[in-house]
Image 1 (cartoon, rainbow, N blue to C red):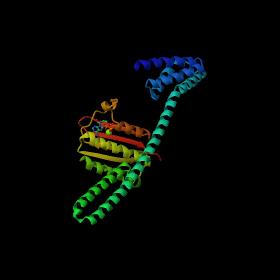
Image 2: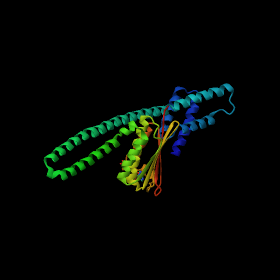
Image 3: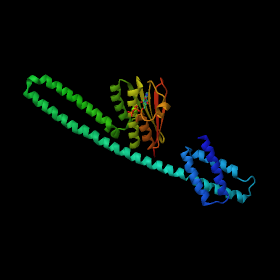
Image 4: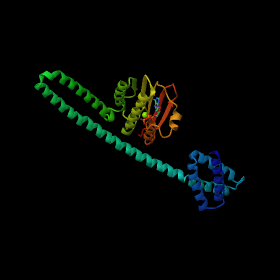
Length: 308
Ligand SMILES: Nc1ncnc2c1ncn2[C@@H]1O[C@H](COP(=O)(O)OP(=O)(O)OP(=O)(O)O)[C@@H](O)[C@H]1O
Ligand SMILES: [Mg+2]
């Protein structure tokens, strides 16, 4: 990598020299090609600026006349702009991919909403019918009253579970009351199922834009699923903050922790959870930091810019 970067340095300086000597279009094309290769070698914009600066320093005449100096700086500027062209294209591609991902997430959310409502309403209707059928059976068969009562108790449990699942799938509470109440509801259900104490802290009276609330809800949900599946934790804490143009959220557990760089470097058998969080955040311009080490618990630190 270092060797490749050095070769690029030299080629860049040579092409810039040609350009300053008046090679025109041909050297500009070379600048573009070098920009493409810089991206392929993993260089960023800051590296490119440094490379350009070094090349300019090495090429400027030791004591240029005023007109010569201005011409050289202008020509070097045009050369740099051409070399940055591929970065601009890559950035546009990234923006477009982010837009597509954001739209895809919105479509999936709509679908989750539809399924959650269908589950809640349709299954609810069937359960009401089943209750009515059992009631009329109980009237006809007084001897079976106790068993029928038991069956009705089981139906109540099913109803409760379906209600819980449909709310977790797309909690109406998220749309109606906002992120913190929705996370409290989620945490309560997960704490009960996983046997972990989960606390949620954050402003209950401030709303964030719907895509931000949805993303944070989904990410915390996956984060808590990881805590219950992998962490062997006894407690977890979710904290939401909204400062100026930033929404922050942290999910922290006191479990066994893990080696983040080892897990992120895994190919193939790696799960979708942490990667999915990063992608979802990327589409909104947000970031995820994972602070964890074996034996010392895990903290997900999420930041999302909030417009307006
Ligand atoms: N809170 C945590 N405590 C301990 N280990 C964790 C925690 N969160 C993640 N991990 C580790 O990181 C790995 C990757 O997590 P990720 O959510 O990406 O995948 P997964 O949970 O294994 O699978 P999936 O989420 O796709 O069902 C996990 O397999 C686990 O080893
Ligand atoms: Mg997971």
